[in-house]
Length: 372
Image (cartoon, rainbow, N blue to C red; front, side):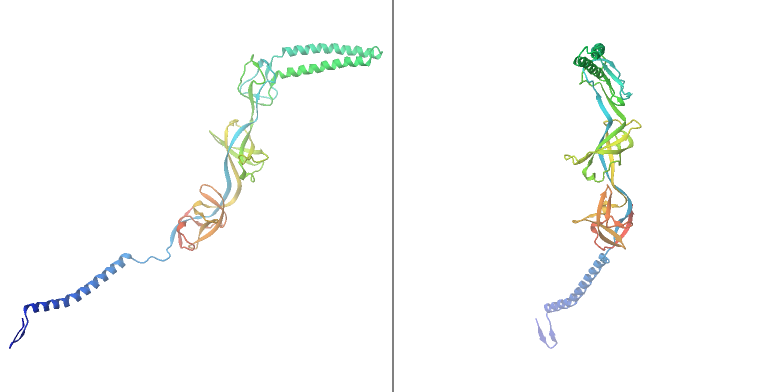
């Protein structure tokens, strides 16, 4: 309530409280504003400190490299093969009969023509003796007929018939002698006899196998060559091979090949000859044949992980003056770790082998390790 008097103007208590509130608002609001601005500025400063300095636009990437060098390169292949005897056959009789003699010392070397077995030939010997007697009589008859022919005691026809009889007997004797020779079973060539399959006294026929004979001092190596190698294959070239259970590496010389590629397998049958000096090679064993084709004594090789396959061709990344340079390459032979590069690089170039998927042309790189 407002009172007017001589002493002047007085305010009520409610009006005094409102005036105090307005004074406080005029003091606190500007202070709160300045405090808020200061707090926000401090937060932004802290964010900048936490973020740190800005990253460079073109960072240097650390990679590993490989220095291209020359080495002997060849297309190597391991092919299956078989050892066979130079000469090998089963021993069979030509005729049937009782075996009266057997000369098979198992595992013994024999020469060509050695008598191995004999079949009973008593009946044939008797036939031969009979013919010998007939021949003697016929020859005497021809002699007498010749004397009579001189005095015209017999005709020329009668003399010719007696001479024909002599020739007929001689021919019969040759047949008997041939049959006698067929009772003798001899070694067809020099070699080593196998196991004996028969005993003396047995009745045998041409189907009976007495033993085997093999020529093992010189053996043959048969193997098949895939058709992609036929252009690089030459008669007279050497191949290496190994056999199971023997650490030694043997060498054979190619002596012949089939005149065409087998259509079913698309491979060429090849035969090589090997000298069996130590006698440790046996016919029938399996051989692993190692061949070298397209040998290049100055082939350029790079690690396989350094090759980048592309939709058309392949690339490698070279390290040049601190930069990554992408180049097209043509590749050739490869093994488990290296790839031959035919064109695109030269000896002494440094090929980047790590981080290839992250690199771009002309990117800055640093070599941390050179692999060999």
